[in-house]
Amino acid sequence: MKSANNSIHTKLKSHIFGIGVFAALFAFFFFAGGLVAANGQSLGPTDSHIVSVYIDGQETSVPTRATTVDEFLSRANIKINAYDLVEPSLNTPIDANNFRIQIFRAKPVTIIDGPNQQHILTPYNNAKLIAEKAGYVVYPEDNLTLTTTTNFVQDNIIGDKLIINRATPISMSLYGTPPAIYRTQAKTVGDFLKERNIQIATGATVTPGENTSISANLPIFVSKYGETVVSATETVDFPVNTTNDPLTTLNQITVITPGVLGTKQVTYQVELRDGKEISRKVLQEVVTVQPQAQIQTRGTKTPDISSTDAVAWMRAAGIADSDFYYVDFIVGHEGGWGGVQKWNKAGSGAYGICQALPASKMASAGSDYMTNPVTQLKWCNGYAISRYGSWYGAFETWNRQGWW
Image (cartoon, rainbow, N blue to C red; front, top):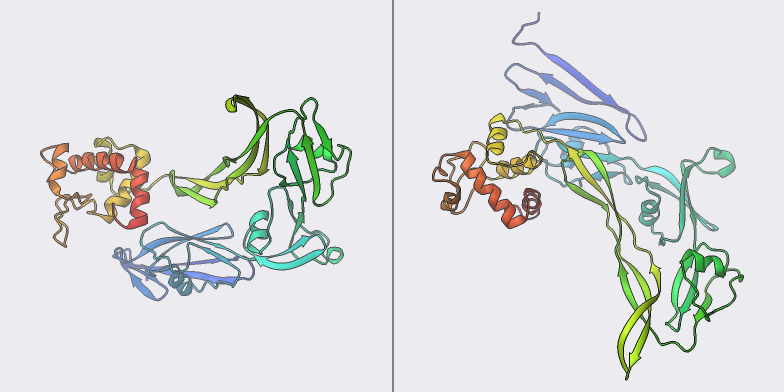
């Protein structure tokens, strides 16, 4: 018999993840009164968290009482192979709802670097990351091509194929500057000069000639006699490539690959008078080390604030909707939305939903600061912006040091 208040609903989720088949990821049983049985344990609304698991793009959301990522995966019987990538790391605490775990299954890749081949397992999909994680040193001028082989018998390859086409190293002295090392895919000296946008000044000579074929460690000299020149090595800013991530909190920046500054050799024509420099102009700029772009994501996920009172209070305090998540995070880790009249348990004197220390600081926002959550939030808003520049800055600081 089924009862309206005491019915058992069974839900079974199973997925195929990466290499191999994992059956029956979780079984949940929902009882009256809001208790959940998961992995053999009864979960109440105060001792469980909702965790979203993404395995090679497939998502499953489940409640759990596990306290770390490793414990969660163990309870869920999700096996992690040696070359799989888990983000965040296995020892990361699960301390909030909507916690996200991503698992990237390793796949076979054959790396072809000239005459050398290496077969590896890797969870990465980016050619540069695959090569670097496998221990290869690659330069910005090297061409990396990642493809999936279609003829396993002919290629003797299973899975993806990464071909590294190396650039040729050469050296060049520009208008008397010390020789610098360059790498190029150009076939001739003339093609290299065009590639680097090197303009040959009137009266200058190029040795060897521009029709000379590029070979490893070829020395090139660009010279102009009768001119005073100086050179300087300067930095080149790296570009930033940002893509939106709908699974990450609104405006949260996650750096996937840090940017690397480049360098350039700047040659100046200097005018001297009585041995002193009176003017200079750029004769030539040549990038010697290409900057490497920073790859990052920006979160676009709209925060889910469960308390309608909290939303009304924040708006009344003049806090932008885009900052709600960061405010909710900090309040949740300080006094809580129900802590308008909450004193710090350790007796420090901190008070209220943001745990202002001392409480009297909040008087600047209104005389009712001891009882009015909107007044407290007005003070918190001013504090976050004046001290950290923004609520996001306050959020980052809290995550880094555990207080604000």
